[in-house]
Length: 379
Image (tube, rainbow, N blue to C red; front, side, top):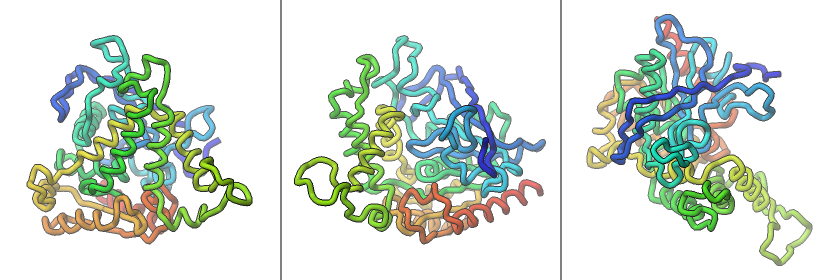
């Protein structure tokens, strides 16, 4: 049974590519596979396609559920579906899993055809720009010359921005939510601490832990705990946990005594069950490297001059990891380039994770913008 407004039962698809793919690092893939899902119908003009780009721990599974699997709802199911802000009665939506991930596309857990072993530590570093190039190849295979919109939140928003710069004529609208034109030093520092926790786990084995039949669960769990703290706002954590104790009084120990400690340990353990440590290293480094203005001497106005798309950006007041000021930097640079840009700054209590929540003001703003896109598609 599916939830009201859901796209229903979905099935992932696999696309194999045998043409070499050159990466920004100088490495390349001779061949690779992508896992993706689609929702809705592509119109006759092939003009209603929307690409959804995923963030750090998400995947191609954007909406709907898998047959016979409880708790398999897509990570942005509240955003994508019939009658939802990205209405699959009007749009053909594509979710794709990026290379380097651990959810089915070629990644560190995959078999390297050159060696017959899992890639592990030999998997090359990938960038946001590499992912966009891969997504463009998938679009070619699907016969989509131009997207009605490319959208994403957080790291997904970086990919949407990069689409507007790498393939300016192939994207009509860029929808970038809770994102940033580059990470701050503080953000890079958080990522480095998380990676260090993984790399210092005795079970990491330099990234080749698969061959030892182990997993660096402790390091991966700590990495998730660090990340999770940054996704929430201080007010949200205070409301949820305050200084609540698990028991009536202090235990005068170093065990789990506060409810917030219990919550973070649970999140870390759950994450370590399903995520891959090498993938965490790769994706956080891709976050670090994203900086489209770098090639322009740090001038974001000059970097965004290549864009031809119309833009929708949204940020959240309590998001201190990708603060509203960072979205406003993008907006101001687009205005300086005389681009068409819509900006919504939502007063929401949930921190960075707000882009995944059901806030009605946020959803109304996205829905209104996609109504505009739908009118253009019909025209």
